[in-house]
Image (cartoon, rainbow, N blue to C red):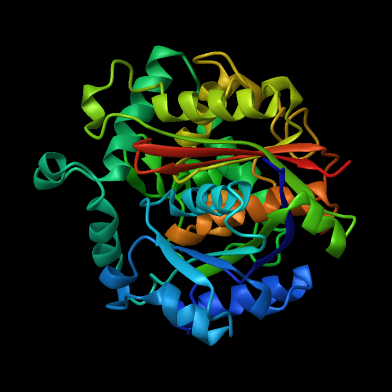
Length: 384
């Protein structure tokens, strides 16, 4: 099996966009073709990561329509839906298409159009990914986050300020991302005094509702070398699921899907937590950054908050996390988020991250569906 390379990327402006889902997908897809220097006619597989174009926009068949819009017919197309981890699942599917030998050029585009719906309508669509019994009782992802955050803070004697510092850090990183939804810093006082959403979490502990799209171009490493000397290689990738009913988990502070997918990605790559130079984690809520840091082995159980307090996850720290601004600042267009994580890691590894650039040879991204219901972890390395 030949190694799978990433040779191009793109990301639209995230935020409130006028275009519809196909407009956003085409914008990212065409930009990625241009970045990779690949003709649309050479694309053999086209994957579209998207959670809910039907629910949000009444639009289905978006993968076929996109192939026509960017002149990529007769490429094989497929829509990848794995709720809010659809983007990571798209990376996994695109990797499989190349690693299996089925495709020598695979374009992955992820996107979502959400802001034209009210906050209540969007929240209801997202909440539909919970178990039907939980959904019937009005349970939402923010409520899970609030309950877990309260339990974590009390159990591990963590200061409330440590969660606020995750938001402060990620907003500071987002300032340097020209495609981020929020390109402004916030101070700790603003975070801690913002309106309560699900106690103890407040408004600035949550990511926004977002429109946007992102794309990656994947091919065998031997093909990559025909296009560029600057590329990244996916050396490890794995996916896993946890209980769909969250309260059935033995420990709500352990995300089993993160642990399992992380271990699989580490084993495939021959790497471990200490080898990772930069990471993109799914900070839909600030507490998730702690849980993923611990599940991936970056911190001991119950001690991620200490690394945040010590500045270890800052852009100039030992392990920069969410240099893109994360979902918190960059935005969270469901199907695009996991792809955008991959875009950030790829750009860091090839030295194209601009003012966000850190020294990195090995990067990791972790994309979470629901409250850890499904997870994909990907490890990339700079070409040697």
